[in-house]
Image 1 (cartoon, rainbow over the protein chains, first blue to last red):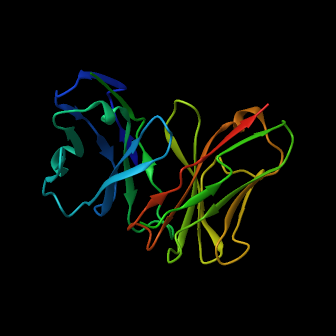
Image 2: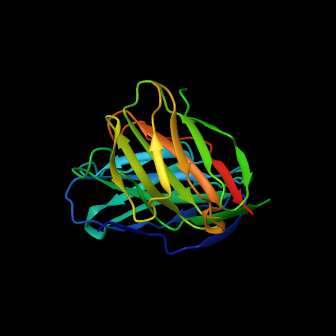
Length: 117
Length: 113
């Protein structure tokens, strides 16, 4: 069975600090997808990134960057120069390929990020 | 950008009542899902739906729950007899092929009193 662990439940930083969110996953499949979602206080789930298991290239998008390391089953997320608007809960999720039609996402427990001015 | 639309945004219901949560997935998507998030907890998979039938369901999705795609656009989740522990945020999601464009709606907060 697949599992996603986000060991950090809450991180508090001061604006402009960098913050790194850890995500460790377990899966028996060799082909899978990893996701990060942001959940602001308003409650919706905002898609940030999807990465497939064959693409271990790190990615940068503006102030966001992701470090995928298959050897350690980790898909970490860094916010550079954090801003108050980054305050939210961030979820890492995993989807296996080859399951039943319409692959479900398995979410981690989330990390609450609080950015103070 | 295409959106998944959920209505209502908030519903309060009495224990034992039936509720129907509604979703309009993105129009060219073929796979539909319901997820649940109890306050302060993680998001949990309930059910996936493809080709007019349930393709997978979790142990949470018991006989009290049902899903339907009554027409070409709506996707509904019915809870037959609500319990206090059904209070949660319910998210609908859709994807084109099971992975790409995995988009969530803004959720329906269900409160059972």
